[in-house]
Structures are given as C-alpha cells and as structure tokens.
Length: 342
Image (cartoon, rainbow, N blue to C red; front, side, top):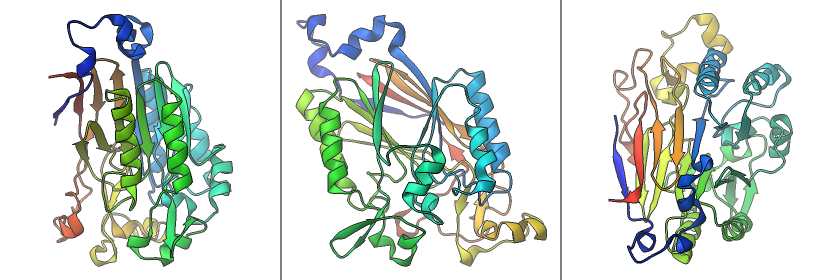
C-alpha cells in the first residue's frame, strides 16, 4: 500500500536563474555521501501488556541490523521502569548503532517521569540531535491540564482526569522548540508520542504546528519536512501546510476496551499474567517502519503488513469510527513522500 504525497517545497530554489550559492546547504548535499539516512522506527511495544513483546522487538532489531539502519528510535509506551524489565531494555541496547527514546504516557503509569528517564538513560524529556545533515527533535506532550496549570505525568495521575484534560505541551517547551529550530539550518524531522495534527491526541498541538509552519515560512522552504508519532495505534498520514504527519502503528496491538473483552486468544495462564491482554486486539506480526531520507528527493517509509489474531475488532462489533478515530488495521503502510516539486 503506497501513496505519494506531493510537496510544494523549495520553489524559490529550483528557478533556473538561481545558482547553487543560494541553495540550502542540504540541497547541495545531494553530491555528498551524507545525503541518505536510514532509521528504524517503532512505537507502543507495550512490553508489560504483550506476552511476546521480546520476540517482536528482536524481529525489529534483527532487521535494523541486517539492513544497516543508521539509528533506531522508539516513540513511547515501551515498558515500565521495573527491575524485571531490564532484560527488555538490554535487548534494545544490543543494536550497535545510535538509539533514541521518546516518552509515552503509559511509561509513567507506575513511576515519575524522572524515574522513567533514569531507567532509559535519557537526560531530558525533550531534546534534539543532528545525524549527518538532518536535525531531529524529540518532544514531550505528557502533561495534563488542571485548571490553568499543566502537570507532568507521574504514577498514572493523568488517568484520573478526562480525556479532554490529557496530553498537552507546555509553553516553555514550545518556546524551546522555536529557538531550537532557529538555531539550525538543517532540514528537520519531529518525533513525539502523541500527534500534533490529530485533535484527539495532543490537545494544544496547534501551538506546535504554528511554530513549525512559521519556521518554514521564515526560511522560505519546507525546512521542517515531517512529524512522526505513535500513541494512536493507527495507520495514517496527512499533509498539512507543507508538513507531512505520519502515524506509526503500534508494534503489538489495538486497544478495544472492556466492552470488547475476549479471553479466547490466549490461555487462562497468560490472560491471568497479563490482565489487560483480554481488552486488546493483537497483531499476529510486529509492525514497525524503516524510513530512508534522501535529501532533495524523498522520504521513503517501508512499512509492514500483518493480520489480526482472531477475533478481529470488526468481528467483535467494534465501531472504528467512534469519536472520529481512524479505522483499526493491522498495517503500517509504505509511503513515498516526495521532497521535490511535482
């Protein structure tokens, strides 16, 4: 399943009268060995929920190694910071290349944010890094709203509040993002757990979108190329005002809820050990993506296709369209995002 998303980027740089002296530095890098980056992305592994999460993660890591990924990144809801989960984190760390983490909401269900960061070895909840000739930014919308105050997730405190009160990004973080983007002339990719495009995800995502769009307007081309998020456990892609928003499906499952309880997929022993397993629809195979960036050309997303471990959500009568959600599918689509004028 492929779709091509047209970009109206770089118009001022492709005029015949313009010389290479006026090109953004990364466009001239098409003659550089650094123009290509291959990254492995997974999200919502949910080690504490899925009985085969280690096998799923190993499949991803084996492919990352085999295909020589430059780095890997997980977009949150990885595992709880427990001593018994150290072998799972150790498995992640077997990858020989660079590795990055994004905080997900469920990562703080049984701990503070600082405890989770200490477990992962992450210094800051939001940060940026450069790899070859691309700038990458990791953001953290794991705050809930209490009146006018935004409070960071801590030991599941956000679960006591309504969905409309969850998933906000702080103004301090948005200001940092603006300064960070202005400090680099490199093309940029944004990572987050919650989507800034989906209004059911980060509730004040428009603050981030405004910063990204204004940065592109300031420099005169689509410097911020794409945003990748997890959290929704859905497969999707939207192109909004020059920026492509890609939803990375869960590696493991789709959450259905108590109304769609099913105890026939796994044994009684497994269902007892993983108490929430009966409320999800698992994918037979792990879903993830490898993304190849070729500056001045395209971003290619290589996805995966699986099937449901029966019964499917549809067979259980699940309503995919409630509250505007995207249809549940055991798919992470392949896509070709053009970075050229077409």
